[in-house]
Length: 165
Image (tube, rainbow, N blue to C red; front, side, top):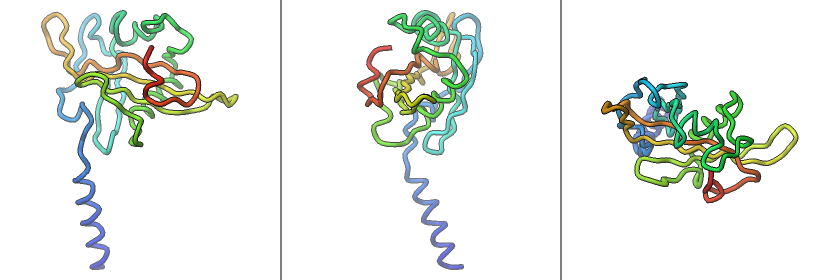
């Protein structure tokens, strides 16, 4: 019993020592709003045991659902999917804790990747960029901006393989 108690305390102490590096850990809650601030979907993401709500907002040509639907900045609608299967991969990418699966392309921003294979065996990498900075629309802060873009690239790439959307 005594050894089990020590083990429990050691595990709890180790868990507390893991830094909460998710940009969402201390941000304001996601709030629904009008126009581009409209929340289309909330993804409950647990990153290093820190729960976060990451929004997919209506957005515009530069972020969110509209940006993804138009094929991102390249106009490639083939690899910019809004399907339920793609969205499950977004969450998998955002929840990864393996080294080399996240980077910070700008303050408050996170690029996350996940490797996967299609049913026919084609290797791909899902790339997701989200922004934890406050989104101000019409003078009001609606909490974290959320998902900027999400797209896949062929092959199992590193973070640098997701440089263009």
